[in-house]
View 1 (spheres, one colour):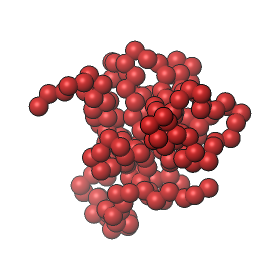
View 2 (view 1 turned 30 degrees about the vertical axis):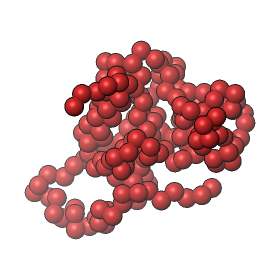
View 3 (view 1 turned 180 degrees about the vertical axis):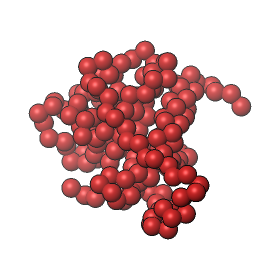
View 4 (view 1 turned 135 degrees about the vertical axis):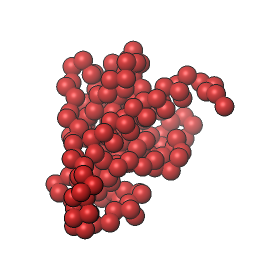
Length: 178
């Protein structure tokens, strides 16, 4: 089977590139559910503040574009908000087709990643991309350092695994309201 639309090929290439980076940094990755309609593209098991939890990642192909969008692509320009405005109530923005649109911060995306045509990755934590409500210009906003995890060697991995909580049941991230 071949790609029928170049954007689908670029999306897959971008996701594979980011998955590889996350794995190289020592984290386990999962596909959310195999559907393009899932709120996130990649789920990783990582540690924030020493408690392991699944993190949601959104991946965007940049190509020649240097802006990473931080809203659903179906959000009309007339419904976008300024940097000073509060987020609207979740799900309150609708397109002409009736689909509900969200800002990625609202739906719980933890990391935004942009991949350019040379396969360079630009990663932004939610604390950064929430400040840029009209998109992140990769030429103006420095990328955030994506965390590393030192993977234990086979010789000492059993001791480390005995101390860790079993996280295999985390396939869907529970989001806290507010």
